[in-house]
Image (cartoon, rainbow, N blue to C red; front, side):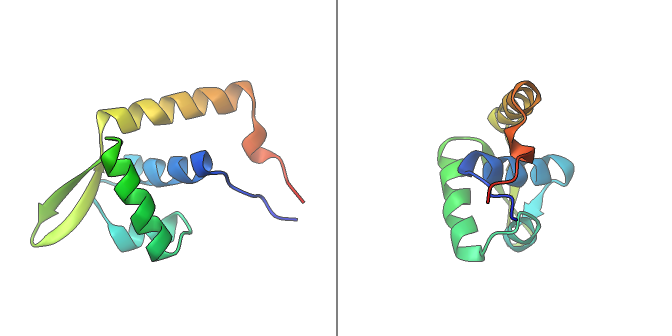
Length: 92
């Protein structure tokens, strides 16, 4: 049995990692969210475009930080999961 994640769960995992440890480099962020680097890069680009995260350059490296909209997403996701806790359901 394996727990499957939908896109909203994956976004939550990425954003909650940023909430806990900011700023964050791409590789550790992808590793912590259990995504291959190519898929994670595409998702980070989407999150940047929708304003859930921001990029900052420090010491010639690109870091990611959580934006205000990212915090809002986390709050909404956590409230939805409290009301309807499907994330913990096992899908065969």
